[in-house]
Image 1 (cartoon, one colour):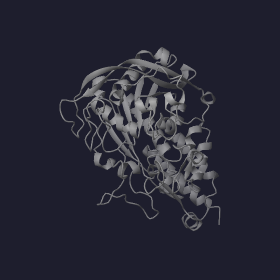
Image 2 (tube, helix red, strand yellow):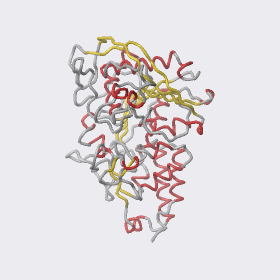
Image 3 (cartoon, rainbow, N blue to C red):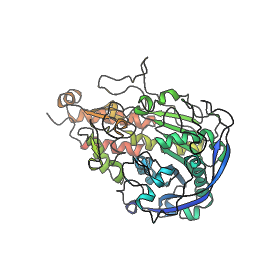
Image 4 (cartoon, rainbow, N blue to C red):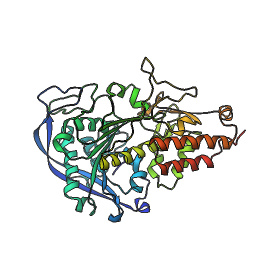
Length: 451
């Protein structure tokens, strides 16, 4: 059981396995108040036994593996394990030979909760298969995550099907990014397990270091990334994350260093149409690229067969393309020690609001053709409706008159789009292979051909 399916891994040369991992984990406490600078010193306390599960997706042929291993802290916001970073990045992971490991690090993913979207927590979905699982509580999630990373390094013959790991990288999105923020500051320098971190869509503060039934130890708001790490941290931020009411990462902005980079991406939302279903079945053939481009002109406001319906059309922005480039950049950074280029931050006015251009798209930040040669206004803000809709952003397609004014013919659109693609690839925002995909979908579109 792991969220939505859709992609037949065998068709892309991959296979999937599931393992139970058992051990004794510790919680952590700090003798001093946790400071905003993130330079925390913790000590292990209250050891407890656990049995959790991990899911491994790897190349069938070990010779096709790069040795890079992405270890995703599975997201439990919906009340069960989800793998948003697998969805957003798997196209790049597969074509570059990564192995992916999803970790059920938190208790909710195993036992569920009352307000879950669906009863898909492990013990609810299959009580027989998952009967042996036992989690002592989320105070132990950090050490459990460390121990899985260590097991990957020491038991790779079993866990990874004989693929020897060369770089083991921690991934986490949304609530998992909150956890990774705390992990980086509290545990990373103690455990020394991971070679780098992709912290995707975090808030201003981290998750609690400890919580009931142990002592409550909250993290400060803001929580910066500690600057004395010896491995790189790439923080990936959407418009929703930066200034959205529930996240407000802007309070935790900090300068880039030789081991810290923050990528803020214009036109993106905390989660978008690609992450909410379109990307689940993306097999890398280009069908999903065509679908995502077309959705900018006809965006839906409902997902998963109507399970969630929002008031406005959902964001159809470029997040997946930039996140794939972030994965590639982080791997190169770990391998060579050379950080990616410093990229511009999103522009804010004196009141802290997003600065937008005359077409309604945000100024500054990492640029893509979706916002520089737009056929819609793409925003991370303004969505309303049930459940998590406030995190899904908005797409407002241009009407025919706007399109005709901007692009008097198809060649004019394709020429401008391709120039923006070239700039995005040159800046490092988009990988060359995805630049080719973006050129193909624009050429095949009808933008500029309709009157």
